[in-house]
Amino acid sequence: MRIKVLAVAALIFAVSTFPALARDEEKVIALVGGTLIDGTGAPPVPDAIVIIKGERIAAVGRGDELQIPEEAEKIDVAGKWVLPGFIDLHVHSACPRDDKEYYGYTNSLGTLLALDFLNKYLPSGVTSVRDVGSPVEPMQAIMEASRRGYIDTIRIFPCGNLITVTGGHGYGLKGGLEADGPWEWRKAVREMYKAGFRHVKISPPYTLEEVRATVEETHAQGMRITSHGGGASDTEPPSMTGNAVKGGVQCVEHASKFEEGLLELMAEKGVHFVPTIYWIKRYYADGHFSELLKKRGWTLDVNEQVFKDAVKLNLVIGVGTDFTEEYAKLYPGLYFSEMEYFVELGLSRMEAIVCATKNGGIILGMEDDLGTIEAGKLADIQILSENPLESFKALGHPDMVLIGGRIKWSN
Image 1 (cartoon, rainbow, N blue to C red):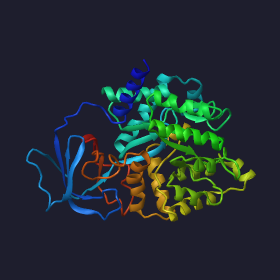
Image 2: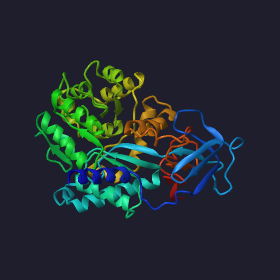
Image 3: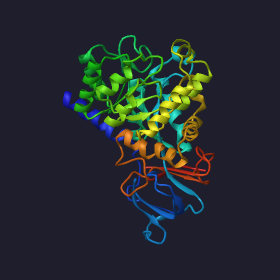
Image 4: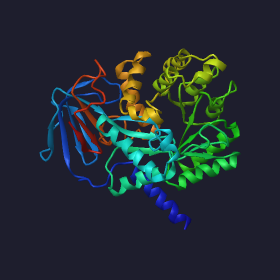
């Protein structure tokens, strides 16, 4: 029975992170004549050709150096810009959007909330999300429905329940799982693995021993692990975020105030970073962090400096949003506000695009499949009508979106 359960869970994960099954694996498409921004940070390639066979990219090159197969369906994208699909690394897709929804919440409603959320992203050019804390059953339903072809939406890489201690950050919320002591944390990881998930998010205040046990268990199960970082739930040095980094997590969420030397330690250990900086800015402006201003003297400048220091240290930075409750109604525009904020804080537009594409693939552990337009990668592509290196105003409004080589949106 145990073998059967594990086999089913593995099957769910293997196929459910990719949109619906019904596809013509042999169909060949050629995107012809556009300017390619491949997500690697390389200079744009004018008059480019992208050849797609089935769900993957077969070849990429200039028009004068690449032969288009006779059987290919040609799509003229001359005068347009060809980019990888964007990746949002921090969402809570199945979470309630207001107090009334929260108290009347059911798993069925959560599933529909998640589907509505994913479908809002579908025409925007965001083609993958990592859900870092939503109830298990809605996430399982979305994955299985995608596998069976009942729904046809963007890719989702869910963590299932976020893991925290009794009374910790996220305790008692929809999509939270309590654990106390290293062995309970190990068991929580195993429960998420059994449920079909291959990503884990942990939330403070955990001990260093709990983090180490959790990290060791995720490695044993072949899972990836990220941690909530900083904010109201953190402690003054030695911080919970410090415990997460010292304990071996692969990624930290939120550009909150970090203890001295922690960003340097993250750089040394190769820990990735999803700053969700626009969410922080918005919450400061709306008074949600007033207790931090009063108790700790924090200001938005502190958070912005963490981001700038992370850039200087060459951390792998990804784009994540983290808006929930009433703010969820503002998607998908919140994602592009995050990218604009990256530029406001000193990145070039090309660097911000790399954060949204290549870095997203790396942080997901999917760099061999997602994030850039290169031969062998999955064909998750968006076509824009305006140059995103001059202005981001066209972001969120692509002319066309392909996921796995299939046209999912056309304006």
